[in-house]
Image (tube, rainbow, N blue to C red; front, side, top):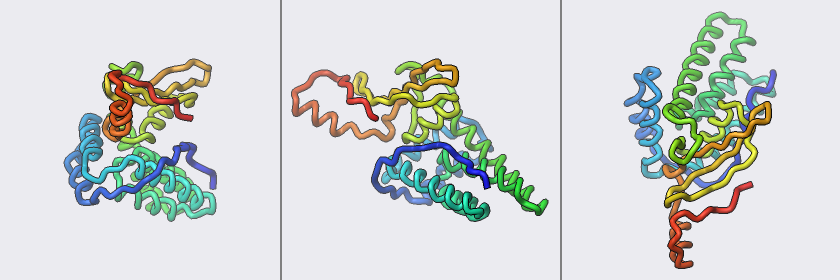
Length: 234
């Protein structure tokens, strides 16, 4: 089978323990939205990020692991097992952009290799449902913004959301830096289009970024500057 995905995310460490029941309640509140609209999904994402136990790092690690395991299953001819593996992730984290995109693409490609008309219909329906949810999730990040200035920033709840917005804008990441402006943390990504045009994107990472080390560093150094610039990340 043909390899499907090309969304490399950095693994960045830790554990997550957000009760599945809490997440199920959050999703049920907005379940009429694809059922609903991007604004509904924006609220769901932010509510989820503010739940006790939410760990953005752990979710990115789980998405990394899912991508590796699903690739291995698909490339060894286990299409249905690939779908089941992605479904496991979606049961735990139905707001994962990556998992929804992977499900949409996997079901669409698997339908091409399925002889059963009934199963093909089921797979294409699943593909459409998850593509629609993925589109709404992306729109929930960019719905009123182009991410082009700190004032026009896009709010994300983990790093993989930044990279998928970059992917949807057809940009290749050239650099990424963490910046604090007026005490607010931003990820500043510079992306390049296919014709070489560069675009700078600003992401508000306050829903998951821990300001404590920076605040402690400022106090220990007696700093009064509310907007120090952190070193650029590789």
